[in-house]
Image (cartoon, rainbow, N blue to C red; front, side, top):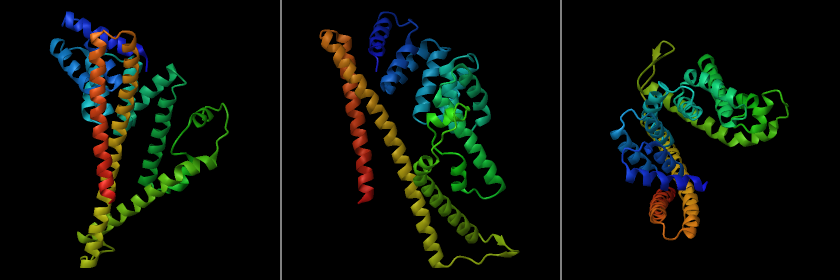
Length: 310
């Protein structure tokens, strides 16, 4: 992490203390976001928008924070508001692309992707998103016409791309290690296939229980053994979904801890050179406090997972 970000936090905080109408709320909030102080970033945006209701840069920072935390509806509201006025910001367009790809709104993401990649052909994150969008579109089309053979699909398109694969698709070279791609995706594909089978079985049983017509005749009601089996499958699926949700939250917390930890180290190094600087002392204390809070949050999540396994 660059010291420049922490220097800017110090500088912009001082400017706001001197003059609350100084229009530096957005860059201050963005610096807080970049070091993992998201609560502080949200508060700064709130204050900035109270003073400057049409402060688009604050709306953009808010949108990025919401996107990072999976609040997609809030992120969409904020980012699209800014994009309705500013259309040529690469960072804004990148955030919108991530948002639309997560929402499955590929038709909105596609033109933005073309524009971003044209400006920077080596933006591999964006190119990876575009390839994944194409792959998901292919899955949807196959799913509409017939059952999807995910192993056959994996043979034709790796589920996880690396830079070599993306470059190879530009005809620079064609060396793709198919065996490595297969190894990298086998585990995921196995889990997907099992989940897909479980969902199909539950859907079939639910249809049977609802007495849907099959072959011109209504299905007979489930017996007690089938009902218990259905309940077990539903519980298994619910547990799997809960585990995925916990894993996603843990990944987010770990990311924030990583950012805070890095920022704390940089701040301590700066404070060693300026030990009497009260702004740096305050920032270091804030980073330490947030880091401890996030580590405690991660411990609770890990304990939840441990308790589930006992």
